[in-house]
Image 1 (cartoon, rainbow, N blue to C red):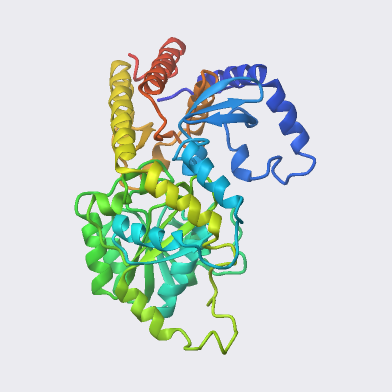
Image 2: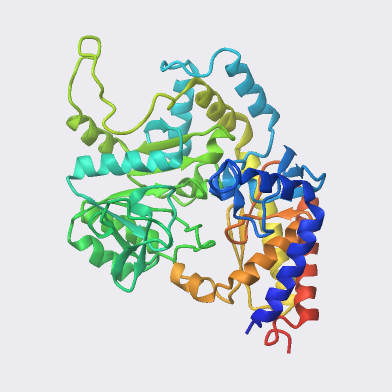
Length: 463
């Protein structure tokens, strides 16, 4: 349906324009090859379609200015890490104030109790722990789940992403568990520790959990790694029912789906997981991961913890998770201000309203262009998917995926001042996003559809 040669040519033209517009960024990336494994401090930073990353000079609210002086509307927002918006005055002030009093002590501060109570109020789970990333939070709850169930395996969904968690770095190949593309097994047999099934597959879920050897299911309530893959009606209810019936614990990773409201997708849809994980955005840019659990799981855990008097027996009781920076004073200060002043009910209402405006506008542009594309929205996230129907699972997305088309979309948007998440076409709103940002983005989308029409890149969509 899409002539690859035409898309390749268009991509080359847009990448050439990108290089012309960003000489300073290109020079910096070339210099970065000297000392960095991927040319940048993190491999994620080089995943942009221009051929090299934009180097940031400053950022404010929903906008970034690069070293070449170009201002961007930012819908990537650090892949959720900046969902609060860049350089939020409230966060900057609170973190700076705490830094002036000390960053970390391996001792609690007064604000810690407020944060714990607010987490329970928002997400509905009473017992919480801090880590320094959502990956570490996922590792912690997996370890706890194994500890209290006596089981080894973890069930994940094909196409998932839960950070650098070993049990989730897997994929489904036919009926086999394999490592995801490019990931080394790290001396661990993936089939021994993980089970993988497709999202929204109730029959496969029944079969996978019937053997009662799975400690926990680790899942996003809406999958976000292959684009927005929403649960089919009744699937999350089925997931909860089957996990309870088989003695399997349910972990919901809300690192991305927190964008659905003040208590994430869990509170917005009345879910009742055994554990919940959230990270990135809840720290307002300060590295934070959080895990919550229901009281039953906490009681089971406490029964298995060695009983010692820490005032008399000074030995390690970390049980394999956590770290000395977890729950630091600066983390507590950041999370408190995010929950109290930044990601409020009013902020989410604005973000979701703007996301609806963006999604409906994108659907209108796509319909006007007769393109066979689907637009998904989940809370403050919007995703353009280059297929006519909503996908059921990651295999559906992979079947329709055209990497050249997606790269072309990204660099075309960058060349016109709009940043979207580089891994796929996901756009996230923040409290500082404005209607003008949405309207400008829709103009760019319409310009892109005109490019496709004039180049005949979609010959079947444009008869």
